[in-house]
Length: 109
Length: 118
Image 1 (tube, rainbow over the protein chains, first blue to last red):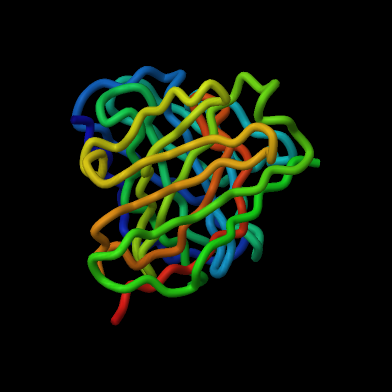
Image 2: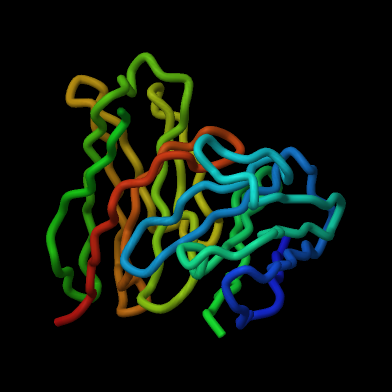
């Protein structure tokens, strides 16, 4: 079973700063199968990044994803006020077929 | 624009069966190559995938829930459904229906909170 670990658990930054969020897998994950979501309070998650580095439709280019194997990163180049939310990574393909990381909460400092 | 909407009872008693339906508009489940799924989120906690189904009724479930889950699709109504049996308080959560674009979930319902309580 692949387990995803996200760090840090909470990240406190100011608007305009750069955010770097980590997702680590217990076993290697195909880059095609690593996904990132953003969730704001009271809302359903929103697809941000798929295939480790491809932005979903409508996602601003300040969001970027990278990584391979067991280590993946979501970077937000310059934080906007609307970016403060919880971010989840997800892997697809290994039993169980779909798993999510525990999330990183991005807080306003 | 594709939209998904969950519906079901607002409260379920322990040991009973939780039943939810997802109505899809803007796409036809019967002519779609996608899978359609359920994801849940206990209050204040993370996301857990429950299972997915396609228009033919082919399913795959989270092994941790497999013994209690049944999913079905009704193409004539453009709906799919979830049944989770023998529920406990640990099954209290917001339940989302989703479209699975493999390998990601690109459309989500707004979610429905289902408390399990006597």
